[in-house]
Length: 443
Image 1: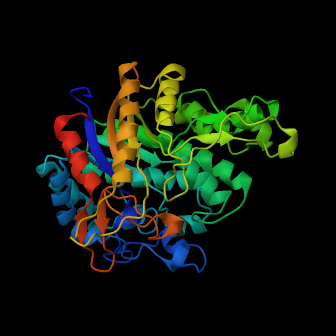
Image 2: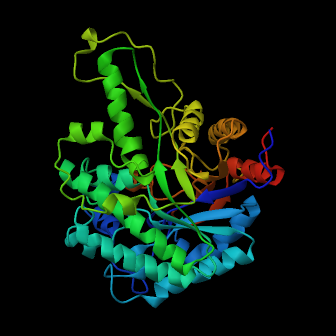
Image 3: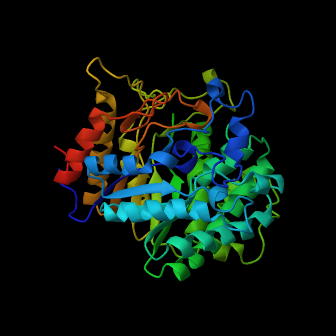
């Protein structure tokens, strides 16, 4: 099964999950530094203080990328490493780190895909109100200006935000991620200011990087009613609206979905004149992260009063407890292709956590991950063959890393990391993925 000849193959990471060096060379504190150092917030009391020590081992990691034959590497910039106070004076050592990384990637023939924000807001800005406060937008624009001016002569592919849904709703409504708040109004305001920051950042990037391709990454998954009952159909519409349409529609110039505004019952007073036009700034591609589908079952009525289920969760799950459902990536891609008019789509994350172990011979065999990626790639190719403009695939993740509130208990990497010694080992899936890249297809 061959992919189009110009299809791009990569892997992805995020700054807080791999860099470590949390307080070195002038870096400021992020909300994840504060959150992970707060007792009870992260499993086992783990923090990202050292993580994969990528800050000191990035050259070794680029050698491993070459071993896998990666054509592209998606990584994120640590905002507080560049602007320790969130705005104001630039930390030159922070800029220099990313500049050296970009130069080395290009020298290795690996195209850098830079994500400006992957959840590590400077704590100083959180203390001033964080994403629910409109005054966060201007500092983000200053940060975008600093990074795109420094790297825009060499970086041609930019992602403004990774999964704003998670930043807004998991961070400010559910409280499972930093900063750990539980307020729906805060979450809604945060989602708006994340999107507004995206919209205002797009022209800044284009100005500093004239050849740039600019996009945003959303975590998307299809919602499917568990039965034909009206209650389950209403739950499906809510799940789809909350995770998918709440972000897709404004970016596509449609504004916030009215059914969701009505359900939330929030005055949405944080939306000002002209905001929606800015959010809809034209983008060159949409990044899509896919991990699972959502089976929507109403909790508003007793189970025995609801219609019998027609859709059940499959038995096969990842170590995260997520159902393995490759068809969902195909379903979501087809929907993007039919309901929206994005010029290009990249799968910017797709992968799975499994309990990997080092064998007696020093190897790490992970047939479940290999199968997971292979099945999802087959569905991506099927969508391409049906006309969806998917132009690349980034496996999540390059390295085992700090998995947010799960700490180091979950391993997503193509590369195994021994956190005690920082030894890296290519897993079976990494070697296989390299074969896929070199063949530009799967058998």
